Length: 433
Ligand SMILES: *Cc1c(COP(=O)(O)O)cnc(C)c1O
Image 1 (spheres, protein in one colour):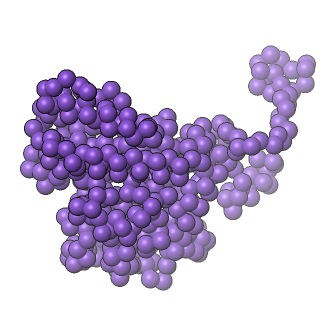
Image 2 (image 1 turned 60 degrees about the vertical axis):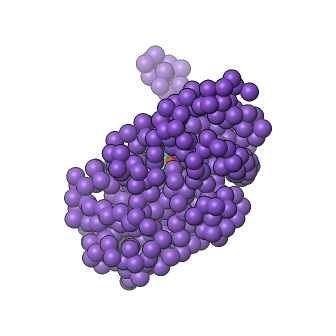
Image 3 (image 1 turned 180 degrees about the vertical axis):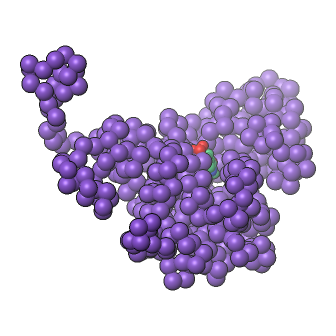
């Protein structure tokens, strides 16, 4: 694989010798490489037989693998798979669980992208979804489960309403039917809540948010508990238990409890192809190293902002589970004792006009659809993320014309309150303080 100095120009520009020696690096290097050469003929065949080593970055990459191990460890899972975005993580997970004619039951309080994936894209592939309005009513889940149901899906801290779900209760319902519970843990992060400890089977993340934290790169993670039970659930998931096409061992035989995540990695993610760039995996791992510090500060700031807002006459309501008056406060004490996260909504008296004046008067809060950034962000869901919903649907989801969603950053709290005071002054039509 290297050319002598007599080789032609076109050959040398590809094959001139370059040092490849081992260098001890503090971080896992960025293996920004489409693929990895085989040692020889036999090792190529070995790789295809047992999957060991690296061949092509869509299949596996060492930089990405290092970030996968980090995230699996923090969630307490058996194995993680990284893909190009949070949407890709949710899509890959569901495509690995449901077939045409299959069915999903999901909590009604969901990220809009997930709702669209279920009600539009997966519906077109013949997969239907029912939504549970009160996700803490076990009977409501029971009533919607059918013989074709292949997944229950909830968010641990639903966006934007903070109506927390009792994960232990929903996991019990799922397991009584041999169905996996999938939890989107994006807003809680594994620092505040580890759904696998409460019976979830698969955790998904938009790593674009808190896990990366810097707001620079998109990414998605899938973490599996490694407890797929072929005896109990095999009949629901024949693609995991059937022999391979040459009659050799299938996923459950090869990977045991890890059959689900192995199938997602080797079959679904590889074929649909939403591969994370190794550069983005590196930047994600850099972000994760400060996760606890950021989330601790963000949660403390969010509690400060929510308490302050809840005492202001211009504010009709604040949906933050950390506030004693929140309907989710009891669940927050059980599930989020170390902090209640930093994404929540509040509703201004005075409707959309008040919301517009408020947002346009702010100087520190950035108007953005992103969240989980180290900087504080603000959004008016009714005219942006949720603009395809009817007025009636919005009201049912608790999104009113005066509702704003914030994602609180790590700034100095008094500066954030001062900025919010500017917004309230703009509503009153008085000069900014
Ligand atoms: C942002 C987000 C997603 C989608 O993630 P992307 O990385 O933007 O594709 C899914 N779920 C939740 C809760 C999110 O906040």
